[in-house]
View 1 (cartoon, rainbow, N blue to C red):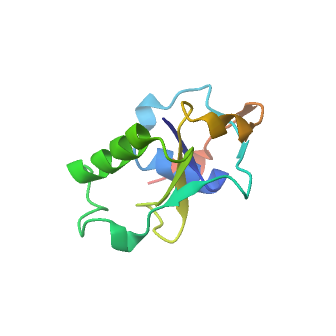
View 2: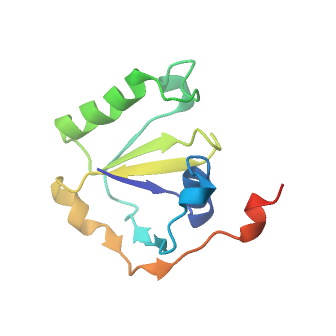
View 3: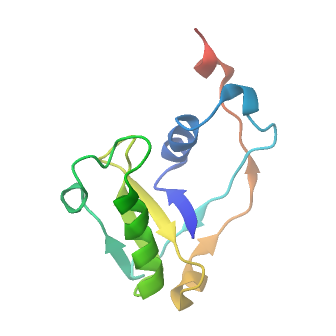
Length: 120
């Protein structure tokens, strides 16, 4: 499974909230992906999730949701709310699904966090 976000800024926030600044890799990259509008996608809404879905660590049921989606293989993309910004979406991609090849993956570009993010 490939974990992506609806925007680079959301991807950065998703990574940042799980990051230990002392372990920041010096060689981060951003890789764009374009999902065609007509590609089948399963949509998960906040109402579909357990009440504690934003807790850390994540509830076991959330992992099961992704595992079940992959094993059923109905779609190449699972759209889920972001725990960081619930009104925005993260996209789980299934490389084993035949429609995955329709997703256009761009080239890697260097990415680095602004050092001001670690100001105290």
